Length: 112
Length: 113
Image (cartoon, rainbow over all chains, first blue to last red; front, side, top):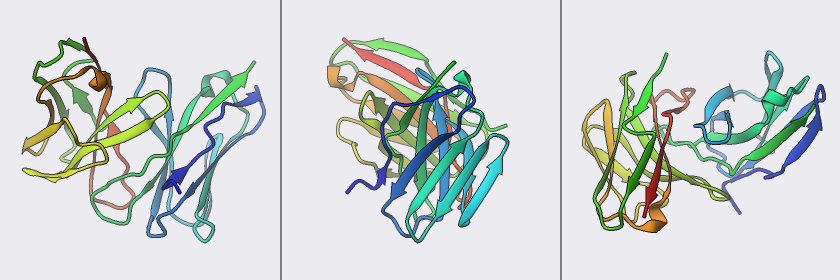
């Protein structure tokens, strides 16, 4: 079993729809969870983090965390073509080294 | 704003050359990381450092070494470059706080001929 699993996609949604990106992780000691967006040829940039069970909203983005199920998700409302990118899920390991365990990423395509 | 810089955006080297990739961060972060990213393989951790002169192997350390003589600078060294080390190399830094993320540099695309 991979430490972090994401559906590689591509996930294709029409402009204005809700995109739902999912991630499961194996380290029960993980306490913080990060979502990065990566455009082709660019480095990853942080868009959301969450460390408490439940939902966290920031603009069009909502992160959801369920530690009991070891599941974290990212919802993008009113998807725009500019949201087309690869989204990386990254739980932070239980040590204090700051090490993140990256999933392979889900490619999102938003079609006009 | 956190700034992580890398010495080169693009680099072309020949097989057998010694290659230095440098990374500098300006946020006084304790932790620094080197990754490589290849299509279909995602981000793979090569080495990381949690303090000056301290280092730990990541998932794919073979063929690489690192140096951290100052807190703000973390260097990745390819002792004898090979064609299978052609890749995008990404540096990142973070603090030790549990909610702090990693901040990435712009990346160096290395081609080994």
